[in-house]
Image (cartoon, rainbow, N blue to C red):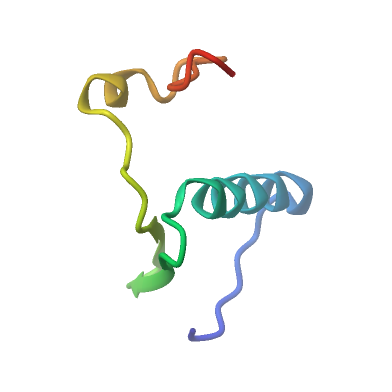
Length: 75
């Protein structure tokens, strides 16, 4: 990846990365893959973390940013 500088709260950013990457590891298929992409367009950065797992059910997507929402109701 190209070296970039981001000005942000380090603790919060670490929490975000750990959460996203841990979820990718947890939900990737056995012997699957995890891809992390960084795209820079102008002064904006986009980070994309993908895994080869089954994905999020379509019905759950509108609720993902609701506080305490869990896709897996057993958890």
